[in-house]
Image (cartoon, rainbow, N blue to C red):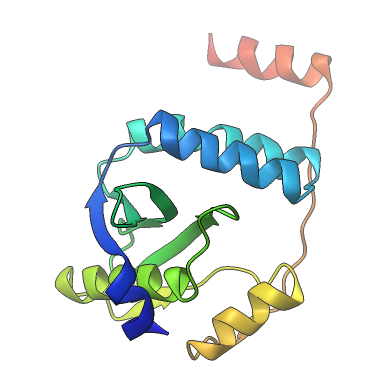
Length: 162
C-alpha cells in the first residue's frame, strides 16, 4: 500500500491548516456523522494548530497538487508522538494514502527521538483495524465522558481567580 500510494502521492509537512484542510474536514463531517463533542473538536483543529509549536500537519497531494488526505500529529510529550487525526477525500481517494501519511508521522517521531507513538482510540472497527495493522496494541481500558459545570460553578471559579 505504501509503494502504491507513494507512486501517486507526494507528502509534505507543515504547520498550516488552510482552507483546503478545512474543506476536507467539513466534507468528512458531512459523510461521517459524529456527536456534538467530536464535531466541536474537529472545528477547533485550526485554533489548536495555531497555538502549538510541536504539532505537524502531514499532507498527501496528487500530481495536480490537490489535497487527497492529511494527518495531524503532536510531538510535545518527551517519549512519544500522538497520532491525532486523519482525514481523506472521498472524491480524490487513493488507496494507501492514510498508510503513507502514518509512515511519515512515524518517521518524524524517529527524527525527534520518540520511543513510542500513541495511535489513539479505536473509535470504530475500521479505525481499530487500521491501528492493529500498524502494530497498535490496546493497553488501557478507557471511558469517555463530559462534564458541563453549571453557570453558578463557572461564576464561582471565576471569582476565585480574582
